[in-house]
Image (cartoon, rainbow, N blue to C red; front, side, top):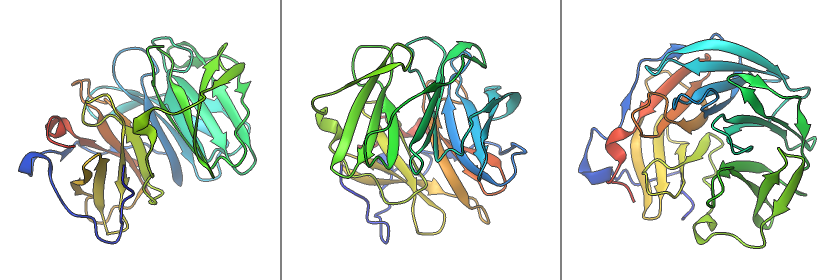
Length: 269
């Protein structure tokens, strides 16, 4: 996929529709000085739940999705270090997602495997590839567990976790669609927003309040951030259970803002 030119990104819209995306009612999480966000199904009900972490925090706040854009506080997970990245994904291959926290600077990574809804086993420490600066996850083969896709100076490296994270298998090569350049915007996420089985990057550009999706055909405008709102993190997940991946945003006040992308299917890329 082409890298985005954040100075001037063409505002193409899927299918020529102005209604491809719509903001759901905002939800105040109560997390002060928020920094990190991850979405995934932690209780197996088909709805994306949330994990949040404040700036400099060493613990995660876990929320259960009600399916309407609102959430219930369910748990706090002590990480033991300050994460720079958190991911909620199915690493153990069960119906319950797991939680991964990573600090690239100190080279710390800890996996919390779900044992029941919003309950986790003792943390498993993971190693990091040398020079890793970012991480995404996706199910890249027929195995139900998600892979780790690391960004390193030479490109990308893919790992499969085995034994609930107690070991890793490094892939000798990459699927063709992983030959991408991620957008330079730090407010970005990776998910299958168009439903074609291939993940795309969504990001908030340096232009004030503009959200874009990178597809094989280029950048697609998703919409604008509400006036006066500054986004600090993005994630991807089906929050409302309609079968479509939503863009989940965290703003500077700790408010969760969900962009429903149901109208995007079939039009982008």
